[in-house]
Image (cartoon, rainbow, N blue to C red; front, side, top):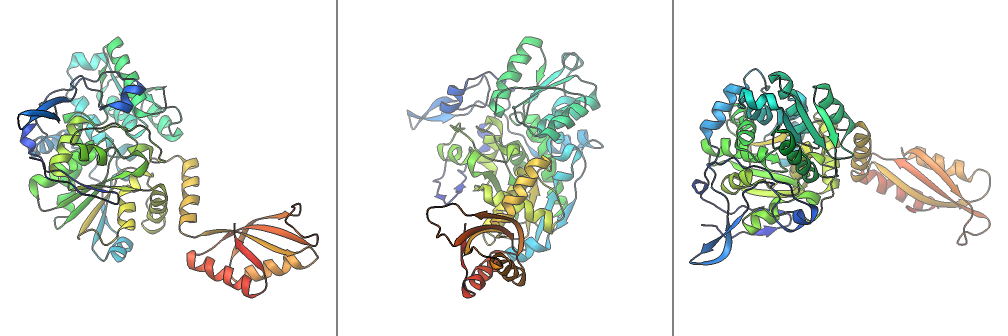
Length: 467
């Protein structure tokens, strides 16, 4: 039933699984503590993974019976979302096309209402609540994007909403969530902590939990983006999608594969928060022990059971990208496509930039969100520029006499290097009495320019080296 898998440098090839094994059930979340999260599946559902016999014996796992989201569910979801969720633009990307040697288009979900795809699933889920359920209000857990989707959907549907966000969540996401009328409470440092708090709140108040990814309506709503991709890029051969908990990837893959099974669907995760590779390798959701990434939008410690089943059945591979790749991709998308995305939203672009010749064209890469804190944006831009060789910090030892610094600065000016900061260091046991170390932070065009500047300084008698 499950094909052999091969792990290659950040790539996990999907196991082939008969999706008909999974039937529909409404999974009810349950609270777990940090120790539980580190040691077992953390989808926060009352239905846990149960061992099942393989060839008459033990040693395997099976998911609870859930009916998979199908194309009919996604088509029906589009009708519900008509007039609420935008049909986001598909833009041709000449710079990515040139890089990959293939036609590349960008699906701009960063231009969706609330700044990400989340309104699709949140509104669909909440539109199906009964009047009695709506009267009890809803509760959600989110680092920011799902929070805004739930808050806007609640505003449109006249439902009270409470959202639990991790401490340190981006300020613009918090403000936007409050701006849509939701109450925001901060708890813990991860989405799992927030999900636990949201479940406790639901149990104590009767509010309905709107899970960020582990619900069939969420997957179906996100899948409407897949319908748009096929309509806007009917010749697509590869679709690349950022993923965290898996709802967005599962929905798009389901919509795409149901109509074009030949299309290759690729998920991309931040390497510091990549729960899917190990989970796919194990054949069931596996919790991460820890996460470290700037991409808060896809920082999820364990796949959801419902999206996991769909991803097993429909996604061809899941790749990982580094923090440097994310920051470089964010900067490149801003500079070349004139589109602002958050680190999570740039994950697909990062995968293309890391391995430009791995993807068959035409390629569609999805920008999943654009909600980025300005302070984080400044740091990410600096990091991205450094990764591109746009900054060079160097130490240069010069004679401690008038005119020496002026000569050094003249040399840098003629080499077209822009000096951003300069520090004199005169007190050091390693320094001769008649010399001084000058530490300079400079702005360059690229890595090649940095090499040229260092070579020029050396050839003109300066003792200079990167610092």
